[in-house]
Image 1: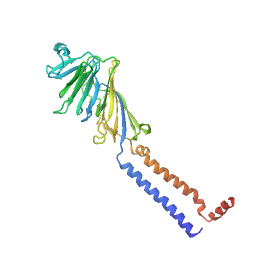
Image 2: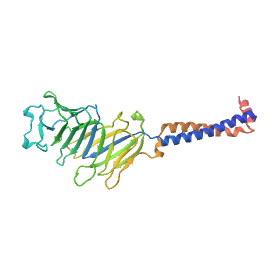
Image 3: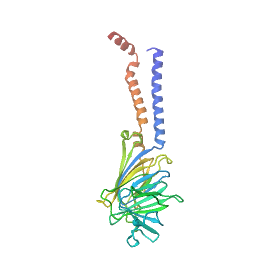
Image 4: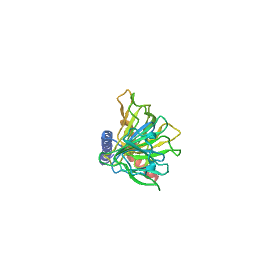
Length: 316
């Protein structure tokens, strides 16, 4: 083999080893960079808390509700509930009830919503706006126009409507509650699934999954400085004594608090992180193809290369 040919072969081999070192450095870098995952949570719980972000308007249909407000709302006297029959706690709260359907609650955002299933089968929702702001408006189609709610309101269903209640939301979410002697409501069961963070849902792959236990508390918060909040919905049925909540959002980890333990952060390990990284897989495939080509050509890099070349030309 000529010196020029040997020199070219050595360059190809050196390039292969340099590519291996570069790939290993790339893998180490990808392992160190925090990854964003899509967390999907599905639980059965007796209590849930949602923090609605500013300027995130939310509409909920609240048929059958008893509306408890501090002070007087601009509603007709016929909608007031007699204090002796009011489910609202304390004299500071006034109760209102409209029997007509299509009751709508429109929230302006920057508010906290706490949902609790009642032992008798109903539901209580506590709404609190940020200081100095208003929750939003209450209306009934064709009966009541927009009525301002003020900074605080409690919504109580003594019975869940036959068509169930569904509350879609966008905001940081806490499912379950810390177990204590004074707290009856808690998370019953659920699962947390972790997916790759591809923009298209049909391209995401399942990376990891864990089961939630009775009494767990899981938090899914803001993932990226307020640009993308977790989304989900809560569904309450008259046939069950729990809420079904589904929530999903992007984050690098998820906090799970467990009774009797300090809690832990759920996130995929480094091996699963690298195994699900498309850039690691892509460049690894290119490197593997190049190494295969070099190894396949290696037997012809010795003195027999010329005879092999003549044999090929003879075939032509």
